[in-house]
Amino acid sequence: MYSRTQNDNGSFNIRCLDCLMTIASCVENEQELEWLERRHICPEKALYELQPRDRTHENGARNPALRPPG
Ligand SMILES: [Zn+2]
Image 1 (spheres, rainbow, N blue to C red):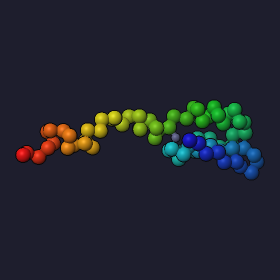
Image 2: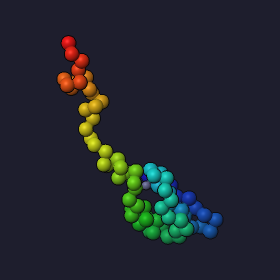
Image 3: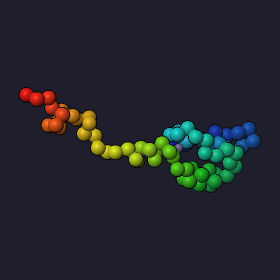
Image 4: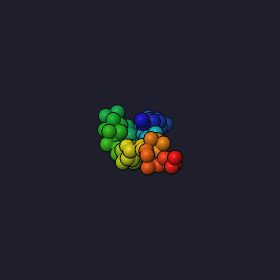
């Protein structure tokens, strides 16, 4: 998700709404805007991808090892 803001001189700034980083400023060309957006490697998304999908800690009750005795 990207936010484009326009400067007084008609050029654009692009900001990534995921990591809140300014990707580019004073871009005048629409094709360049799209290219820069595609080129951005978002650290927030990268971190999300790295997170383990294992969610067993959320259903501890289902895990016999974590059940209280009795
Ligand atoms: Zn980003």
